[in-house]
Length: 170
Image (tube, rainbow, N blue to C red; front, side, top):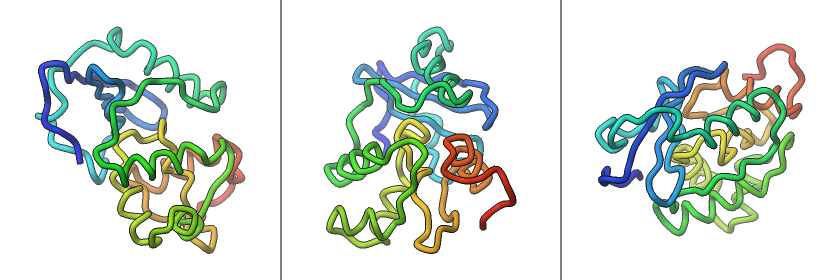
């Protein structure tokens, strides 16, 4: 789902309380935010040259603001989604307000596709956190399927107030 590196593709590592994130950008904008152990993380060769976090200052600032509870939406240019379907999924995810969740089925009905298709598209969201795929939960309210791990998904939803800071839900 991630295009091969171009001469303009670059990446950096950002230390956060959810792990060291790999952030990737190209000339169009932010192309990836990946957790350590991310299920769908592309091979490092597609990330291009390593850069300093100075080249990602806006991304780093907004991620840290979000993770400290000071930011509810991101204002970052994004690289184009890899397909029209992925772009539709991105738009549906970005329409989910901070502090809310939706089930795979609810998103599927709103998009006219199956819950399985929502799951597949959601799992391959290359811009985790910024495009809030963590806000998608099971029909029964349980946390399921997060490429960054369910502990991180729970952490992000607790941070947003969508879940109480109590025992795990999976």
